[in-house]
View (tube, rainbow, N blue to C red):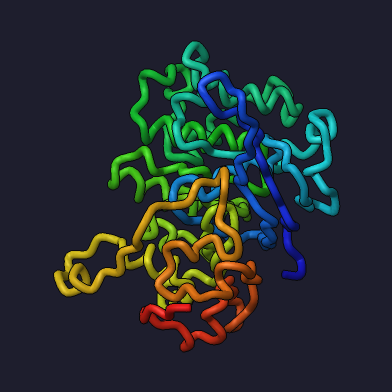
Amino acid sequence: MTGALLSIRNLTKEFPVRLGAFGERAATVHALDSLTIDIAEGETLSLVGESGCGKSTTGYCVLNIQRPTSGSVIYAGTDIAQLDDDGMRPFRRDLQIVFQDPYSTLNPRMPIGEALAEPILFHKLAPKSEIRDRLHQLLADVGLSERFASRYPHELSGGQRQRVAIARALACQPRFIVCDEAISALDVSVQAQILNLLLDLQQKYGLTYLFIAHDLAVVRHISDRVGVMYLGRLAELAPAAALFAQPLHPYTRALLSAVPSTDPRAARTRQRLQGEVPSPLAPPPGCRFHTRCPLARAQCRSDVPLLREVAPGHLVACHAVSSPTATNWEHNPA
C-alpha cells in the first residue's frame, strides 16, 4: 500500500523457553512468522484469531515493547524495530497503546489527574500553567467530567477506567494507537459506548488504529480492513465488508460460522473445526492450518501458501483458493 503510515515487513518473533521439570530442555515458541502488512493513515486495521495466534505479540512488536527476532517496522521512514530504548523515545509520543485491563495500567495510588498529566510533563507538551486545561480537555474528549481528575482508579467503574486509559493514550497527541483487546473485559452495553468513543476520536484527531480483538461482531463495526491470523501467520486480509460478505480462507469461514446466531438454521449448518490448535512450540510444516482444514491436500502438508491477491484488496494464503468462487467445504483428500 502506497502512503502507508506504518509498514510491517517479514516480522518474526520467537520466545526461547525451557521445558521439563527442571528446565532441562530448550525450546522455541514461534509466535510470529514473517508477518507483512501495511497500515494506512487514518484507517482501522483489525487482527482477529484464536488465542495464541500472535495478535497481541504483533501489537507489542510494532511498538517495540517486545523486540522482534527479525523483520522491520517502518514508521516515518525509520525502522523502529532496530532502535533501543533511547532511540525509541522520540517515537513514543506518536505510538501509543490501550491495554485490555485498564486497572493494571493505572497506578492505584495516583489520582487520575496526575496519571494524565505525567505523559504531558514527560514529553514537555505543555507548560505547567496549562496542564489543568489540558486535563479537562482530555477528560471531556472521553466523556468524563473534570471532577474525575481527583479520583483514584478504584473509585471508577470498568468503563470509566478504560476511558481514562484512552485519555492517557491521547495525552501524548499520538498518530497511531494499538487497541489490545481494549473492550473485551467490559459489559456489552459499555463495549458499544467505548467503540463509538474510539470512532469519534478517530474522526476528531485523525487517528490510526491497530485493533486487536476476538469478537467478530465488534471487528465488523469498527474496521476498515481485517486480518485473520492463525499460529503466527496471516491467513486472510481484506476490507471488512468483503471479508464478512465472502470469506475465502477455510479458517475465516469457520470463525464466522462460530459466531452465535438466533437463527436455528444457522446453528444446524454451522461448520465446526476438528481438533485443537497445534502447539506454537512445534508448528506443523506447510500450511499451519492443514491439520484442521476440510480442504487439506498433499501440497498443504509440505508447501507454505503465499499470501496473494485473489480479488481487489482481498488477500488469502490458501492453496485451495484461486478466486472468490473457488472454495467449498467439501473435503478434498490427498
